[in-house]
Amino acid sequence: MVLGEIADALAAGDTVKIASFGTFMVRQKGLRRGRNPKTGEEVPILPRRVLSFRASHILKSHINQNSE
Image (cartoon, rainbow, N blue to C red):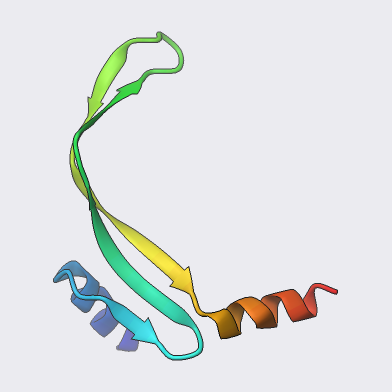
């Protein structure tokens, strides 16, 4: 149920912050040119929305603390 609420908020364009964990946000990417790696042909990459996550400093330090 919680994940459903988070997904609905992100689909609506809202930012979701979870304390001590991080922030989820939706960004708009514009039209750009890409290249087919097999043929080298240029193809347009259409505008789209992408999900972005930024980890909190608490999560980052916890991950780095356990890697030693």
